[in-house]
Length: 579
Image (cartoon, rainbow, N blue to C red; front, top):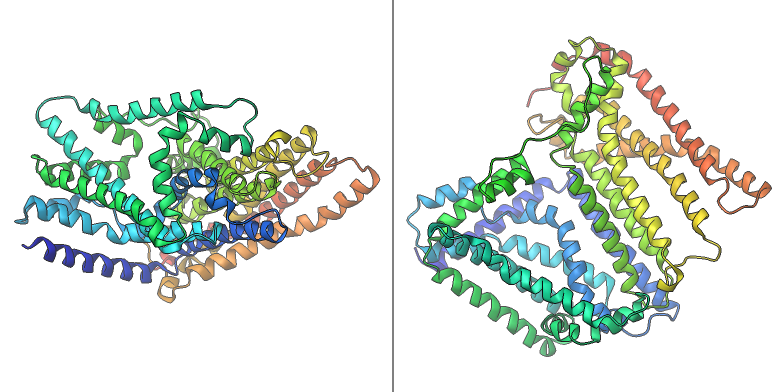
C-alpha cells in the first residue's frame, strides 16, 4: 500500500471517528464540565489581565515579552497539558491500542507504512490539544499571535511523541540484543543534573521575588543553558510570522530528524508497538504500580487496604471500606500530591504572569481553589463508587443484615471522604498562596496575619466537607428515587440518555444541593455580622459561624437520608430498566 495513501485514509477515518464521538458525548456531564472549566479558566485569566490594563499597572505586552513570561510558558503549558489529558484521551485517542496493534500485525504493511499509520493516527488529538492550549494562552495574553503559537505548539507536541517512539524502538532493539536499556535515559538524567547545577550557580541571592526571578533567568550559566528554549519560545510568541519562522523551522527539522530515525531503526516498529500497547492496557486495568513493575520485569505488587477493619466492625464502616477500595485504583496518594502540585503551579503562574508589583494573590488563590474544587466534583460525577453503582445489585446488599440507615450512610460517606480530601487540598493551597511573605508581593491587605489566615483555613474545611456531603447525598437520592434518569454504570443505559439530558439531570441535582447548602449559610451570615459588630476582631467569628453552618447542613443531610429509608426498604432492582 502507498504510504501517502495510507496516511490520507487514516487521517480521514481518525477525524471522522473523532467528530462522531464528539457529537455523541457533547451533552454528557463530563464534556460540559470540561468546557465550563476551559471557559472559566480563560475567563479568570483574561479578567485579571483586563483589570490590570485598565488600572494602568500592566504596560504593553509585558507578560508575553519579558524573560519571566517567556520562560515560564513551557512550565505552565505542561501543567495545562496534564489538565488536557481528558480531552486528548477522549477525542484524540492513544497511538497504541492492543487490539488495534494485533490487527495491524496481521496486515501486509511495511515498516514505513506502520510508521505513517502511527503518525497520522494521532493528528486529531494533537490538533485538539494544541488548539485548546493556544486558546488558553491567548486568553491570558491577548496580544500574542494565535496561529503562530498554535503551529509551534503542535510541532512541539508532535516532536515529544516522535521522541517517545524513537526511545521505544531503541529500547526494544537493546532488549533484543540482551543489553540493558538503562543508558537510554542517561542524556535526560545528565541534562537534569546540568540544569540544577546551572540554576545553583546563577542564583543571585536574596528573596525569590518576581523581579529577582527575572534576574535569575538572565544570569549565566543558566541563561546560556536556556538559550535554545528561549529561542523556541520567542518564535512561538513572536507577533509576526516572519519573526517566528526560524523557530518553527527548527521544530520542523527536529520532527523530520526523529521521523527519519524511526524509519531507519533495524527493529520492526510493530514489535515495539505491541509492547507499548500491552503496557498501556496494563496501566488502564491494573494501575501505575503494575505498569512500572512490568516495565522492570518484576511481578505486580499487592494492593493494600485503605484501612483495616476488625471482625466485629460496623456495617457502615464496611461499606465505606468497600467504596474506598473501588476509588483506590484512581485516587492514590500520588494523585493527591499531583493535585496539590497542579493547584500551586497554576496559582503561581497567575501571579508570575502579571506585573511584579501587582498584589494579585486573590486571583491566584481563586484559580487554585477553582481547579481543585472542579477536580473534586468531577471525581464525584465520574467515579460513582456509591449507591449509583450498587443499585443494579441492590438485592444482594439488602440480603445482608443491614438496616436502611446503615446502607445509606455507608454508601454516601466513601466518595465524600475522597472528594473532601481534594477540596481540602485546594483550600490549603489557596490559603498558603496568600500566606507567603510580603517580599514576594502576594499580600491582599493590611493586618492579614498568621492568626487570621489560620482562622480562614479552619473555617473553610467544614464548609467544604458539608458541601461535598450534600452533593453526594442529593445525587444518591436522585438515583434511588428516579433510577431511569441516572446513568448507573457503563453497562446500564438510562432512559434519559435517549433525550441527551445528562446535563439537565446534573444541573437539577446540583441546584438542589446548592439550595440545601445555601439555606444554613443564609442563617449563619447574620450571626457572623452581629458577632463581628459586637467584637470587631478580624475573623474572630469565622470559625464558629462556619462550623454552625456545617452542622446545619449535616442535619439537612441526615433528614434527607432519613426520608429515604422507606424507599430503600421498598426498592428492588427490577425497577431499573435493562440496557
